[in-house]
Image (tube, rainbow, N blue to C red; front, side, top):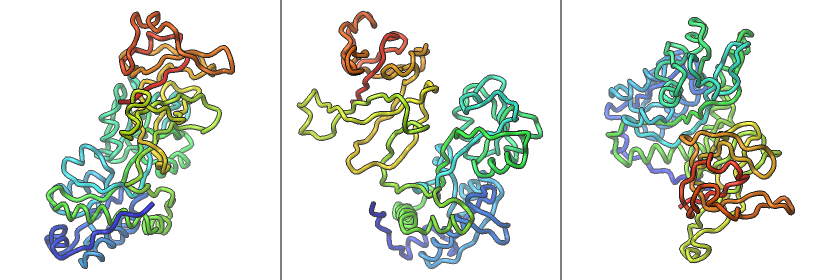
Length: 389
């Protein structure tokens, strides 16, 4: 895929990004994937990126090092820094204009070795306390998304977890893996609870040309191997490189790719020449896998194949069984609703499916295409085909 066309830096652009004449970059030494070393001698991918931006603009670079993301963010928000290297988050986007991510990392939990908690979903339960590093990306994420568990903030999430004997500790995969290896009394929950999108940022009052320069340069440095090489020099996995910003996400369920029941997905064809065909819809041979044991698959992003069409969000998959692989599960109506386009049941021949002849017997009325229907109203259904308008 072709890299974004770089914007040629100008004197006006340099003056806009670095009004003091020096490019001031805030470096978060608290994230060992992004930065290593000491405040006097920092190293890592973010240091290399800061210096590369300075070189392209013809500016000297000043590295402002901090031990936590919240302090790096505060330096940017208060005008003490011109560039930051932080995870994209809605709370931060109120003050920061971000590029697309250049690195993708993951947030995971550690728990006591004898804990009954096995998955991220298990952690979100009443009575569970989760230690986090205050102001980190995973602190912001868990503060929004945990419905039952309690977030306990401290200077370091694992230290808070250990000192207060909490039920779980949250952090970045790489240091959490090392912590679990060094402490046999704890274990890692390998499944991630979030993807952390590390990006370059500046304040929102910069010109659109300045922000465009940052974004196009990041894409160029991802495409030409600069980011991968910098990760390798820092002892980090080059596979952490984020995909090009122009790659649209393809939804796929986490877990093994084979041996899983699959749910067919129907989407509208975007071409106007097809609007009169099949009421504007074209059945695609694309499927979303359902894990055999989980009620709701975790969806991940991946690059598009050239012939792919955009995938809409897929929701409400709890309790659905595909074919004859597993029995239906009871599901709450408050969380499981979906747009229904066609109702089907197993066919008695060739293991296929056939239309359910009397949908009214399930719902009390015949559902119209695109209507909303609670899952628990259809316990006999073995397969649901969804449409998106």
